[in-house]
Length: 184
Image (cartoon, rainbow, N blue to C red):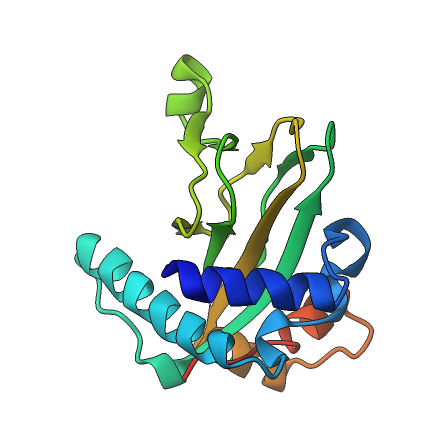
């Protein structure tokens, strides 16, 4: 992602005092904010998504058939992100991380391979987007200095259709997914 977009996005995250992902991530969608950089970021995410799908020899969805939800993550020195995945439920699709700094890794558990070789340690670089299936577990070891990143989930038409037809207003998962907006 272009560094100008990254700089504007970091400013927006700090200005809105978001980053406490443990308590806030379900309650808002960064892509609903009114910053010009977010439209450009959605376009870049679609470009990356399309490349991702084509590399798997799969047909990418059109941008108007995808929904996106994102949240800011700020880690202070000695904080970490424990092993987790974004979702295991039937409405899981794709997730991604976007790095704002360097010097740390996001560690991904690759089924079967990680049992023998350990987690894949993906070096974080400013502007790097790492896209993966939403069920892939990942973590971040304790950081030495403040670290910003953005987590996001993509949902397809099937997810939104399923929730529309099976709406449970008490479901935290559904309420979180419904914070999503169309990518296009």
